[in-house]
Structure formats: C-alpha cells, structure tokens
Length: 408
Image (cartoon, rainbow, N blue to C red; front, top):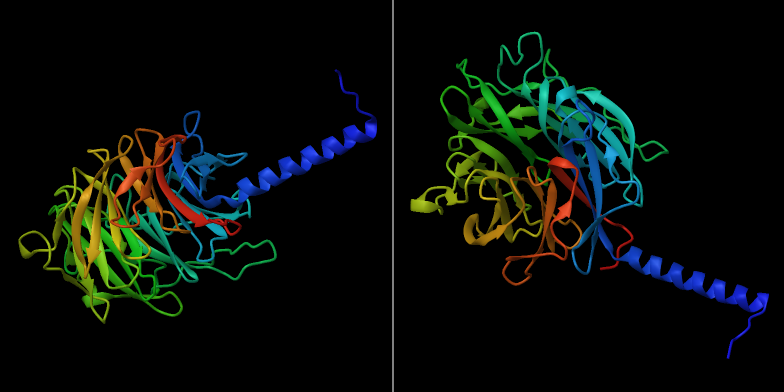
C-alpha cells in the first residue's frame, strides 16, 4: 500500500529531519576537545608559502580530522615553529626564510585569520615561545651586516611585548625590547669568538626564566643559556652569561610545569639531559641519570621533547628511529617506560592541552601526524583511531589549544 502525504505533512517531516541533523551536528561539535595547528614547510609549487593544517581532535577516540577550509597559508616561506598566546586566541608562526613572525587570530571554530607580520631582529628564526605578555624568538644568527650564511656568527634571542587586544581579539606585537643599543640578546660565550648556534627555547610556566639550547660549532659542545625575565620583558643573563654544558649537540629543550627542572635532548649522544633549577634560576646537573650523571637514554637522533602538563610523564621523539621514548618523572629522575612507533622522522611533539590524554607527533618525511592515547595509569602510549593522519608535505612544528565548547 502506497502512503500519500500532503504538503503540511511533508513540511513537518522536513522540519523534524532538520532538527535531527542539527542535533547530530551539535553533538559532534561538543566532542572536539582540541585544535592542533601543524605547520608544513612545503606547499604546492617551488618557493611557495608554507601551510598550516588545522586538525580537530575527537575527545572520545583522539582521532583527528581537518576542519573545513584547512589548510591555511602560513604567510611566509618555510615555517619552522609556532606558539599560541596564553589565552589561546592568537597563533604565532615563524617563517624562517622570510625572517618573519605572522600573527593569526584564532576563531571559535579553530579557523585562523592573518592579522600582522613582523620581522625578527636576526637572521633565520628557528624557535618561539610565549610567557604572559611577551613573545620570545630565537634567531640562528645575529643581524646583518655582520652575520650571514657566508659569514656566520652566533645566534640571538629577542623579546616582543604583546600589546593589549583590540576589538577584533587581535594582540599586536610591539617593537623588540631594547638591550642597550641592541634589540636582541647575543648568545656568545664570554671571552670566546666561537660560533654558538641555538636550537631551541623553553620558558618557565611562572614566566620568571628563559632557557636556550645551543651548541659550539667549533668545539662540538652543547650549552644551555639561562636568563631571568623582568616585568617589562628585559632579559638578564644568569651566571654572568656563562652557560651550563649540555652534551654535544642539543636539539630541543623543555621545562616541567613545576618550574623545577629543565630537560635537553642531545641528538648526537642519543640521550636526554636533566637539570634542576635553583632559586636564582641557574641550572645544576641532576645526578639521577646513567652512572650518577644527568643523562637518560633516548633513541637515535632525538629531535623534540614534550612534558605532560600534569608533570608525570615526558616524551621524546627520535627522528632516525621513527619513534617516541616515554619516561615517567619523579623528583627530576626519568624512568624509561618504552618506545612507540611514529611516522618517518618525527620532528615535533605535543600533548593535548584539554585532557592531557593524547600525544601527537609531526613526521617530517612521513608528511603525516601520528596520534597516541596516554594510559592514565602508567603513561604508556597506544595508537589513536585511524592514526596516522595526513598533513601537507614536510611538517615541521605543531601547537594546540583546547576547544572552549568541548564537553569531554
């Protein structure tokens, strides 16, 4: 028997179906727990701008998918680092080949909107961090005309104050903070002409201190430079500007959320070096590592490091092994938990900021993102649903924000 419907009945059915679809969409929307921003150094075409993939994270499974209209142009060539503002409303992307920092406003739906571009004081920026109302950027070399690829010199760190927001939720960067006649702080060894090349930056959660990992190109020695941060962003070198030694060639650096420890990966030695932060901000090598030293075994060519925001675990990517080494943390000591396979050549890692329940890596040669769920009991990792996730070619860095509307 064929059923017949009048126009009113059809309209009621359509309305009911629309409400059902709307309810499903709303329900799905509440399960987005984070937005992850993955910069990729190579878009289609030679010498083109890099791109930024925006991936939303499902709170139930940890699975990732691109948001509508993703990817977005990075606003420059070869983006290599990114960071989000303290309130998660602005994204800052470092484009190395253009010596620029591009600021994007982040919408409620995770989309990004370019607002402003500033030049870094030096040449080839490589790392960025934010603490409170200041942005810190590390340049490979100090400014021209004294430094270049053909005539390299030591790197530098600069401070950009972040101005108050305008009505568009944009927080513009001010001029770099002055350091006497300079607008940056050189990373030089006292009484030495050796070239010091920086590799990473970490800012304490308290905003009181900043640390830069670097290595001596001549002596093949690694260092960590420490600075205290003044109320106006001014940096003061710790220990008279003398850095602590840090293996052979540091590749990344991170601080734990309690402001008590700093960890540095040594890509040549294949380990993680641990330091305790003293009351004056200076660093002292831990004695709980291998042989009573401050070294904890990692894998082949460790490249990036992330500390669980709750402070219980630490994760290191090993670029040549294509895996993660996981550690539990206790009084600064790292106890190795295991290794977990990623895509080819992982170079960046982050822990989801909402629940601290997922870990993601950007895999440079794999051109993808690997996802892991954190075991809440022991910190071990298992693959998230559908991992790995496709990104644009040659991803280099990642940052994440919690989704304000999520209900995990």
